[in-house]
Image (cartoon, rainbow, N blue to C red; front, side, top):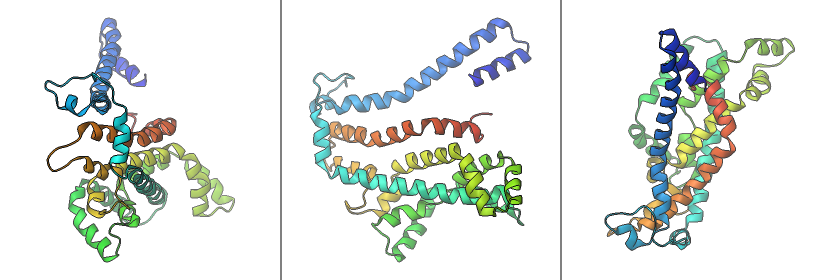
Length: 292
């Protein structure tokens, strides 16, 4: 509603007629509904295809609604490959990366937001500039490094190289700057150390921003393909997004089983988002990414 109110205020400031101001919320809502519909179309298609038979999937022209429902496709997809192991690998990888990114980003963001040292702003800008480097460019140097450390096909090889993020530092720094310095000054007068201020004041007040970063990191790395595809080469570490390749054979693809497996793979991300939805929305708004 704040966005709609802002649009109405702008229109009034420009001398728009009351009728035009009344119609603008309807137009905006219609655009949002259309966008949401277009976003949901692939998801609905995936779910419906998961219930179809193989001949029906290959039929031309394609049909939306299954003629016969085949819920056994989900059981077949689960047994087609060690799918449970793939899901566990993804949970360990995405969860570990989310935890480490949150910790390292919070420490770095606090330093850039509160500590005074020579070249701080320049270092921060250089750190942000790494966001412009495509991740494909750093794959080979990172792989050579983990190969020298004997981390190929290990959890640490999947997690440690992805444990740092400039985006997370930027997100948390923006939030930390909004916290009044007087709270820390009062704590320092009472004898708190710098780390004590960070631990007892900054972190408890930053729950929404920390949850936002954790959700972003979990969702991104749950669906991340390139790095796990390079590092993992056995079922012991292959995450689910790489494991979906098992449904693509040399001479064809079991699309109904692939869609069933993909639907199963999306369940953990939906659960994580629903559990952190309240914190996620607050973090987006309070960190400056909500259009304020």
